[in-house]
Length: 180
Image 1 (cartoon, one colour):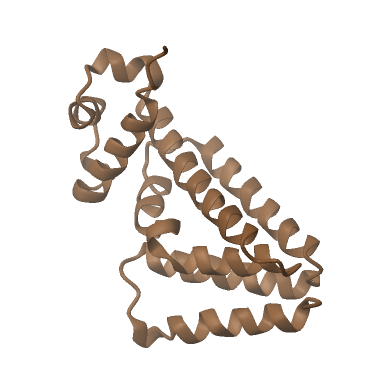
Image 2 (image 1 turned 90 degrees about the vertical axis):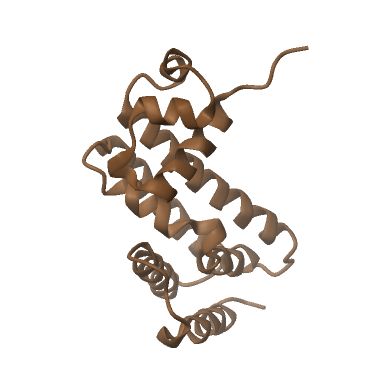
């Protein structure tokens, strides 16, 4: 029987460390200690700090997409994926704007990670459009989600900012733009 990979644990421990102390305090030594592994054990999986940061960002986005897919599977409407995307974005436990923003703005961030993030966002746009939502409405929904997420990356978004109303308005746009 093979041992489970330590890689997911390294990513979780690093994410927790960045969340608690900030990306500026992250070192490979601290990440290894937080995960309970040797620095050599960490370096086996992530040879540089940039590689570790990039993997944490990829993991955040992968988890976000997994939640969107799971929620979409429960929604039989053609626009189910779009509704799931909006809900997952506004669920900060899922979209993690606080963590992702810290990682993306780190001076140690690899520019290739930003390219991968851009590619994922483009794929989300295409996915919205493939649900029968016209490209302009799909762009409005995605840009509103991106903007709200960016605001969340600056700190907790207070309800008085209209979060609930914005989320509901996006759902209304989707219902009006798709054959439901």
